[in-house]
Length: 110
Image (cartoon, rainbow, N blue to C red; front, top):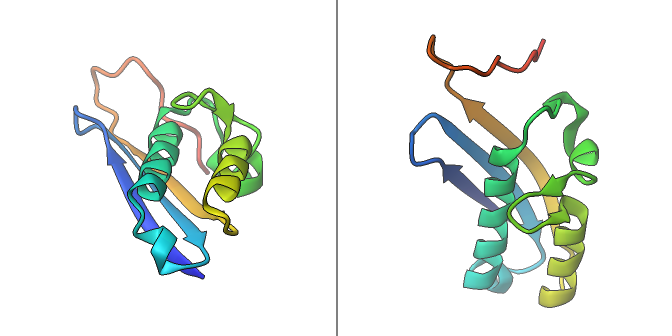
């Protein structure tokens, strides 16, 4: 399997996310539509609120990706149909900068 890593960085440089996705071939891994799909996954993860990232991949599958208005699992299943390959979300991360002026509390992550 081939792995692809994509990063989304918000315009204010205070929020970013990274995803690592597997597919079967480098043909799909280089496909612009596939890379766009992975970018939407990264953007959707950046937009998540109130998600405990310790729940891991399986907890993420059932949450709605606000970029696509589907669950992350539905996004992956659609991509599998479209590209005809086994596509898997391997890992994900979200990074946020909190300042004194920030109205949001940072996640309690152990």
